[in-house]
Image (cartoon, rainbow, N blue to C red):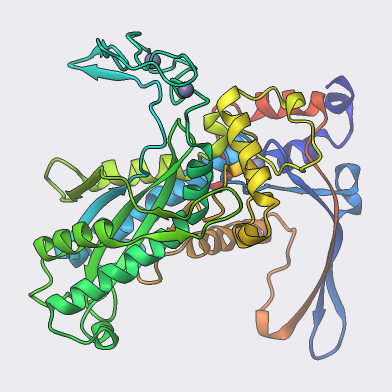
Length: 445
Ligand SMILES: [Zn+2]
Ligand SMILES: [Zn+2]
Ligand SMILES: [Zn+2]
């Protein structure tokens, strides 16, 4: 810290840190950008990192994971919030007439793989977890009852009452199949809507677009479930109204039907019978309205919050696991360790190779995207980032880093190489002090 504070290029370093918004693990780039006049070949301007502190430019890691970099995750969260909200009330290129389109907030859950400790409450009072007066004793000699009133932050939440009875195999296979189950759900939804409109499926898109924005959430027990905004648009997307027959009621019925009927099969392997996976019976469907129970702000906030969380919130690791790693060294909780072990075991079975369970063991089998939107939902993360980079570029021009030339007449040749990542321990403390109250401050839009 002292060396950094006393170094002659401290101000330039601090400026880089502000520009990364306090990123905890910035990427270091070494290189140069040359601007040539297209007509004459004359070098107009050169930016090189040679004059930067340590000869590198630090750029934000842009992770969405709060466990890796809180400030970049905060930028991602805020972006997601604005994207979801624009799809609900308009803005950022979406007309505000979109508020009249039927829109639901749907939660698709995973089925049960065994009884787990749970936080229950009624009227703000904690209730016993799983009280059973005549509880059975399981084959492992454990009484299947728990009268503890768990706090919301109890470390045992989500852990099985009997780890030996719990279906770890089912849990990780469900996670692995969840993206397929979602795809089948979306297909079934479209088929059902086509039927309601007395249309052939292939003609549906000339009348109606089903727009989605969804986010995966890990429950404490280590299975994913999905929260989705589902909106009906006209054929051109949010700018056009859906046909009059496509009401919120029609959509509700179609969602209920699709959630019930779709399934995904894992064929019999080795010692195990074939398994058919379906969504859990807990299905939540709520209309999103500007003035009702469930507002667009609440939904956007909810989706954005989950977009920055991942499996590490249930006690696993936030990076890949090598099958040769000694799992004991990671200090995992028993439930997460068993789920990871099951991924590694199933991952070694040839018939299940497509599920890539070894590569996704740290995600407890889930290899899908955390937050996705269909093409017509609204603006994309790329749109927002491009707008911000444009803003940042204008800023660069004013501070003299990039010359202000007409793009058509200038040839830009850039050369970048990766030169490392992160901060020293001393720098990390300075970064925290410099950017404490301004997560993502450099990314204002
Ligand atoms: Zn970062
Ligand atoms: Zn309990
Ligand atoms: Zn048992």
